Length: 228
View 1: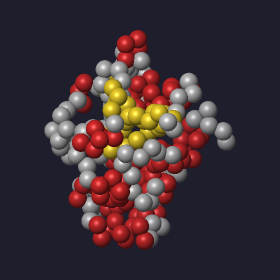
View 2: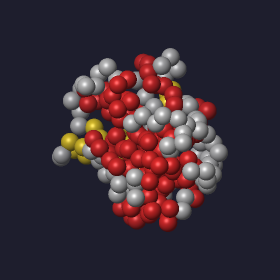
View 3: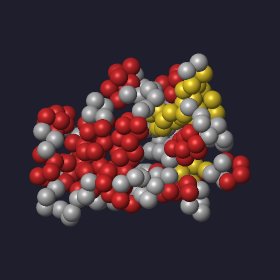
View 4: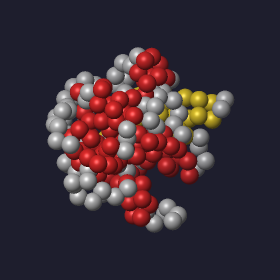
């Protein structure tokens, strides 16, 4: 894919770990973070989409590939029982590592973060979908489509409610819809707990906005490959 089809990480979004701020607009263009950007004429993406493309191709070839998360990054894992190793999808071709590498890169993570967010674990289907919906929600937030963002974060949370990041992102999105402008990274933990205990409150917050379709149903209706 790298050599023959020119699949690349978008050079405009390349940065050193820790070198980006909250206003870097990483999620502004869906082509950079979702798979359709790699399938378009430019063949460009990021760590949000490159591993997904390789996994989709590899699974069709019968390879035991899994999607794995670490802090602000996705990578692949060959998880075939006796054979298990990690693959970085954003470089020139594929680079093979072990879990210890992704404890340190692109950000150093603690055992607490690993436990709270499910980092370094091979994702099941529900976990993968939760990640995709979270990325979709971030793009919608960046483009100020707030009710739709809340719906995506809500669906992501319901698929993996145990992940702290899902809890915080949902709370921050709901707060934005209700009139607050607090950044996601600074969402109140108390507000997060309130939402976890009463997730139905989200629906009341978005009633004054535009129609807010279920993102899962919306994607099903738009995808001719998905059964009814």
